[in-house]
Image: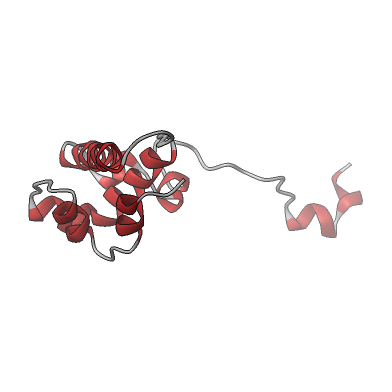
Length: 115
């Protein structure tokens, strides 16, 4: 289901436009550092939001709430702490890297000498 509000949001191209269209204040220094992270998180929140049966004003309020929630996540934290993007999740120093099956080259070249 689409709405004029969601259609308008889909046509926006900058983080500032999202904040302007949804009448949400923001700190430029937060947006400067985390703009893509905020929009990605907003998209994650929107993906779990049901707009079925809502009129356009309610859709706009829900979209505004998701942007505000995403913005708050990064106004009180950092992109590294939140790890929204896959590349940041995969390179988390707190989580040991996943290791595949590793076979040393020496074992392949000299399998019989290790008995």
